Length: 300
Image (cartoon, rainbow, N blue to C red; front, side, top):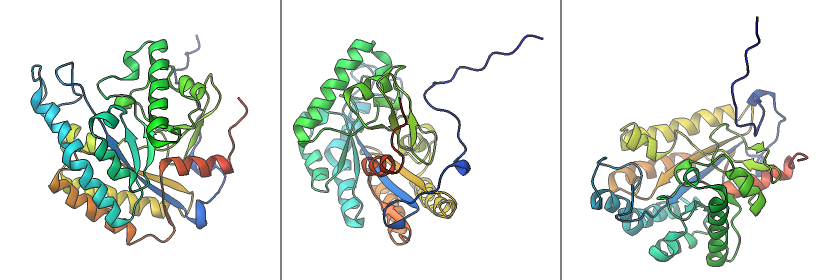
């Protein structure tokens, strides 16, 4: 009988059950690390799709869906910043670099909170999977330099527009000097990835505790999202007695920034901060830094 060939895999990591790994703790002996990622995005008007639309299939110019996204840059994002300031959580800010020119006051609101800035491409109208390797390399370099120029410090982390990296994105990120990526929702702990440019750390990022799939794909309610955050927090806090874990929560300015959703989001954050024993409220970059201090990059 002929052997069956193994299914293709990304080839960047090996399987590892979370129960089989070494024990460690987050700072101050915390066992659960929590971070809130806020996506600040900008889309081209009258030049291709604006991503998944509130009303799909609209002709160009798609003012309805572009305006839905733009609400986040004008109103929703500032309200999210106010909420995070109120509950005392430092944000992880995923930035399309076009926002620097388009909505600089929005970024000022998050800069006032000492946000940890993560590169999120130039615009969500262009995804890495649509670029050839040379064009993607140039785009990553442009984004890296733009954040370094505006923030006075180079970005440590990357999240692909549309969460849609190409086959070589991780190679190019490591080559450019990024420390970690949020593109791989595969685990509740960081995972080292192998790349042609050397090891790159994958920090947990939510596929489900993420307002875009909840509201756009699955038609969930604001109360559904609140319950998801609270239940994930409570369950992972229990899990953390066995293994240290990460809870990542992802929101978009034009989605959770809507008033009726923001109120329920704030309630979820208040539940977490009221039950903060053994919890480290932090950023994706600080999670990566702490983890690599305990578990240095493997030999390339």
